[in-house]
Amino acid sequence: MDKISIIIPCYNEEDSIPLFYKEMTKVMKKMFNVKFEILFINDGSFDNSLKEIKKLAKEHDEVKYISFSRNFGKEAAMIAGLDYASGDYVAIMDVDLQDPPEKLEEMYKIIKNNSDIDCVGLKTNSHDDYGFIRKFFTNCFYKIIGKMSKTEMVPGARDFRLMTRQMVDAIISLREYNRYSKGLFSFVGFNTEWLTYKIPERKAGKTTWNFFKLCAYAFDGILAFTTTPLTIAAFIGVIFCLVSLIAIIVIIIKTLLFGDPVDGWPSLVCIMFFLSGIQLFCTGIIGAYLSKTYTEVKKRPIYIVKEKNIEKV
Image (cartoon, rainbow, N blue to C red; front, side, top):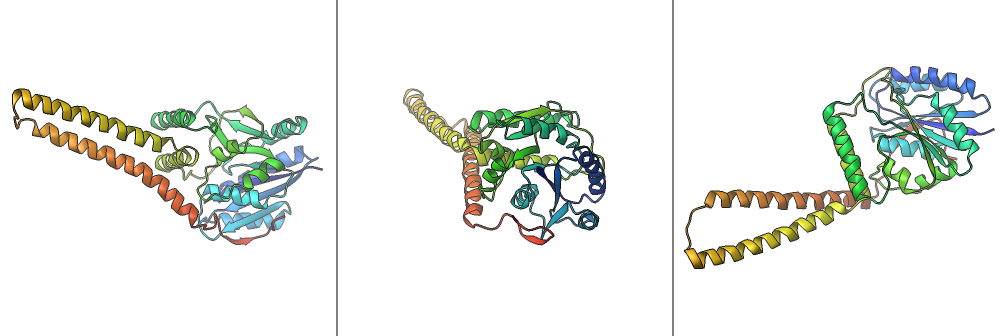
């Protein structure tokens, strides 16, 4: 009998947890020929999420949990779940039911019946719940990183996917501190089949992913999978050096032919401010990569477990 481990990161999701398990119960009854391990990762919640998880764990043997000492973020929660999951196949799902549990049956059939498929993932082509600005920047992000990175980034890809043990072990081997899992899933390779679906509305609770957090997450993704911004910064520097050289030649010729008038100092000040901004922009790009390097070399743990009812296999 195959075993499927379901990893569910949770941060202040006390209302969603019982609803999620209720829907998972329906799936487990339909997939009676599969053994399930439901692994909740409490990512430093300050509501009653852990109490709800412990209540389920007390009543149901398949429910396991890991609770962090503080909030380490969803990326840390996902790698912790992968570290502890013992299934032949492993899935990552959001607890808010925007990743429909009923899709698991179809995903399992695909990956089970196709030996050349290592992962079945879900993606969406529609973002009806996004506002115009968020939709615009989302499209821009995938276009930019698609041009910059050698690692394929699938537009609209969700974290919800079912993976083979071989693929999971490959992801676990990547122990970088600054994680961007959508990129890591692609980086390790393996064959992925994508299912397109429309994201349903949240059943309970509120998302903690606001616009600025998503922008920061996208920026982390760019830094993690391409060094093109550094090349762009260097290219901008070369361009402005050439422009300044041409400007110096023009000024010398103009002075020799027409004298040296003092008019034009406001435009000169504007040019100075513009060039200073470009310099700070390029320095900022270098600083961003340097800061990521700094956090990596410190070798701090990706997460710290406070309590759990499961051991690593």
